[in-house]
Image (tube, rainbow, N blue to C red; front, side, top):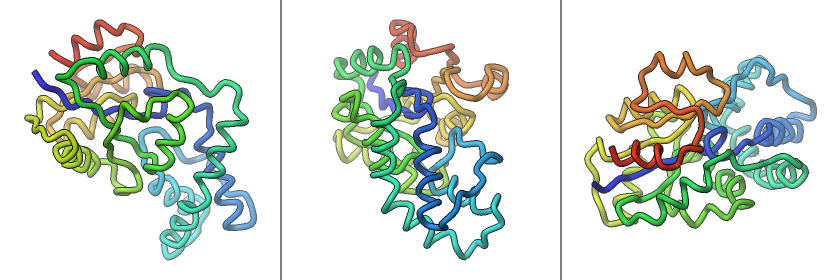
Length: 229
């Protein structure tokens, strides 16, 4: 009954209040000297390098600029992200997030990790105000691959090495809020627990048939039952 439980961050564990979008926009201003239009780019469920590429495309900036731009963003984004979090009064955990993480952390059958489009450093910065990083010793991040579908295998391999355990695909659980969290789980033959706390509608999530769909992380007992089902 062992489980590897991989959590998304934005709109799943935390309510980011746009800190990532603003930090990324400010980073690009420093690089290009003017603001780039991000209004046409949907941020939910994507990796940070994917977002940078989509913003460049939306602003008709050539493909050859992507790699050098991403390298510069990687350098300056973390400090700007820290500033945005510090200056955002309502940056917070979502209801039930802390309770669920702590309840899972107390169970020896559960091994916890992250599966997020944030860079590793960005993910750690976002979780630091809530003292949650210690509960997630491993993860897979946007800094590992631009393609979010690659992340489950990366997380799985790191978890095997760190925890000295192995899991069948059905013992791996991905908890998130977006369609890409469902696709990640289905593509890796893992199970998905999806919460309708992000920017995707309930109907759009339900149409993709996640294993479990909740309105939030608040019903801790029900979430734990789903994890160990």
